[in-house]
Image (cartoon, rainbow, N blue to C red; front, side, top):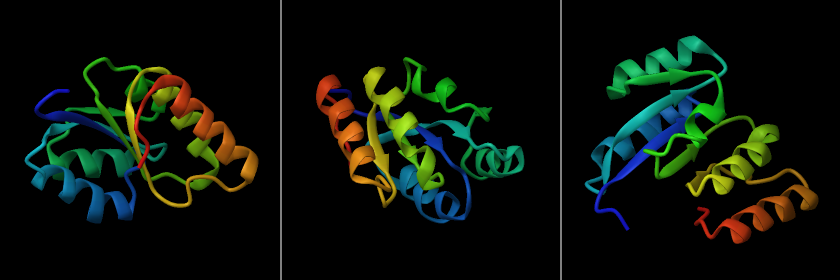
Length: 123
């Protein structure tokens, strides 16, 4: 395992601004936040400016497929968690997802299946 991890932030609203960003930049095990991803370009730009993030996108696939990213931090609306987690897991990214992880039992099983099949950690 790498000594310092690279983070991709998906969802850059108020919670990401006040919790995920500050926690990531203060964590000695984090090399930096490479991506600010949000469907609202203004949120992504504001997050990027505040936490010195170099890349901005509206597409979570840009983040989940980046070979430099080790950990995906998800702070999006709940209905999009499953496809983000499935993509992140498929690309070998560890995942931190805000609660609730899923809205239904079926979604929860999809997430568990993706994480187990790809050997990644989910928090």
